[in-house]
Image (tube, rainbow, N blue to C red; front, top):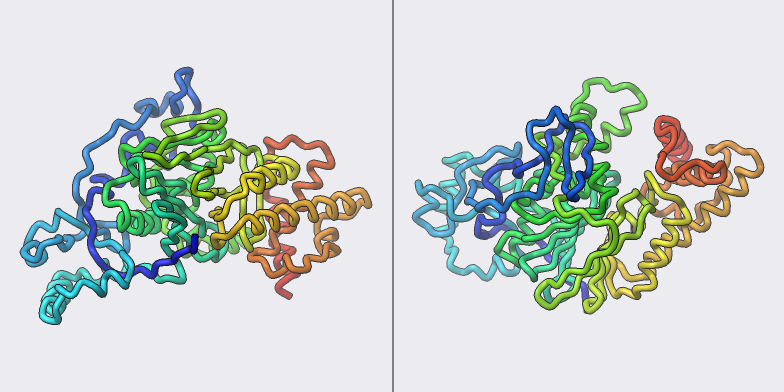
Length: 447
């Protein structure tokens, strides 16, 4: 099937997708300690927390007003004209739909447009509308099948991840995004093809750019691997926000602050999976089969991919980076290569990577070949007694130099070196040294 990318314009959608609160029931505080799994399979926090984590109780979805750029709420315009002008504004909120559909709304006469613009100006709402408009080069709804979609973000480095959606079986979302404003935009895209809020969500792993928007799926079943749930609080949004807003950060944090600068980590409450799995799981989404496959540890310990066999689609999470140099935190190079080979064996027509554009199975093969190449080269340099940076300088990147973030080679060489030394996959090693070498190699490439 031909992939369809939709350019996004302004329209309306029922507010049911938006929860009444930005914090889901049972959400973890950003200051919470790491989670643990209880004997009954639910998630628990430490004894200092006021209540244990359990399966989120479905809550009534109540309308909210459109969020502003800073995440607060304003009076939203309702779906009927009287509410636009002095009404409660509680029946719908602004979202994005395809621009060609918006242009078909001929009922928006010039007079109505002028009245609406006047209302927005008088009530200082223009900023909120502009904040909701998603440029096609930044975030797009990609149609993969009759009821299957990807939310594809332009890959601009750390944190610019993708998501997936199946508009069937109550709605099934694969991964949320790095912050609440981005996740709200993603929700707006999905609501344009499925007005009701999604009943299910799966996190492919615990990295924040795939799960820090979970709290906006109030009452949803959130599926995750045990390794994801146990590590869910490993990274803290509050710490990321501190780095992002730091004045004159130390040198070793400057690159990270630059990477964090486009995001807004405020008000995030960690909301871990409430349905924990230890292996594979198959869902029936009203006739669409979804196989959730455990392929870790590869990128992380809890890596999941979602395969829709009849649709020929795989949502790969960060097991697969397309046209972007991969980086891993747990697992091993061998396990990562095996995970990619497993995806290839599914022979999908479309693969949605964790980062980068949607592609076919050739993209997966390309990343596998990259890891195999780096593994061979790095092992040889390790045997020769060379440093990580010396090895990076000697490894010819060839076509891989055109991938985003090529300096991540240093992290991948570090991983191979640790494997050559028999280091455990559960330990990422000296992260400070790894990132120092990544920064140093980035400087070499840039000069």
